[in-house]
Image (cartoon, rainbow, N blue to C red; front, side, top):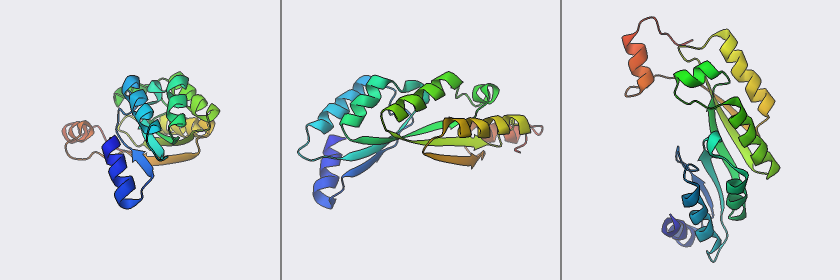
Length: 167
């Protein structure tokens, strides 16, 4: 990763990066090593990454901030525990709220992602998701419509069970 950062910086003058990986913050030791290597560069970079809410800690966010991280993109998906379970995300409301609180305390911009229209969604669960988005007050909030793309588990579920429909 460091050699790619150097290449983009020296060949193209790029100093802002977006690290996108579903599990970017999962391995804290790896992220801290990356941050230490970024801090040793002869130039400064600014960067944003994706993160699971339940992998965010104060220590990790502080380490990331020191190395130039200014934003975290978090896939929350739903504000309803049952929907979280059905989509196999399994994020607790407390983990979500804690992650946002840590980011805000450290002045890290939050981009929060929500999905509505799962086959298990109802008016009630959609409203719970919207209410959670309002309550969290992320810097940027995006809503998406559940889309069963070929090759995904959601596609196979909808394809083989005519009772499951998207709302």
